[in-house]
Length: 275
Image (cartoon, rainbow, N blue to C red; front, side, top):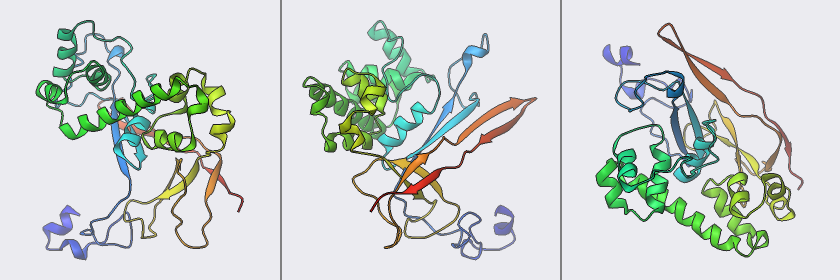
């Protein structure tokens, strides 16, 4: 594209290689949020400095899609394969306020979980911003996740029966996994997932494009959602629920200075939901 622009083409004259139907100047209106989180494995490199700088130190990344930033963030954290079920507390919390401030001040791979410790401990968002320089928009969203989780913990005092359909769907819109909810409601993940109340709120699949949802463009990807209802692409479309699925995995490996992405994709088998 840069070469075409250099020789005199304008953006409206260059077709979009992804959508195949829109020009390069087309600005899409999307109804989803994408979060990409880098993966670091400093434990494999003795003596490596875990401080994050402008130098590339990641060995891969996770990408997640959700209706909101909160949902996409928690999905992304689970996809990191580092033992997180979402926006969790740190496995080794900071032992003092000074240590916590240091964890927030210096960019490091675990700063996201120390943000939760800081917010949960009562540190204000302005204080965290002054220490970390992380934009307040992200801090507000993280606090909303924590506030919603505290509301779930209050409801959990009455047992799993207090989790009604609306609360469950709200939790899913905030990106909470079954494992997170099981811990909050004092049960195990298998029992939680197989309770009659949870079975009544089955997730379903939906198509996503890289442009406006009103345009039927290619390529499209399929993701798992839990909503009250789904927006059909046309009047004849019926909601689908998954018969089986596996995640799309991208792992980047470094070999002799070059980066090679190793991708695996398993197809999704879907069946139409009963009318």
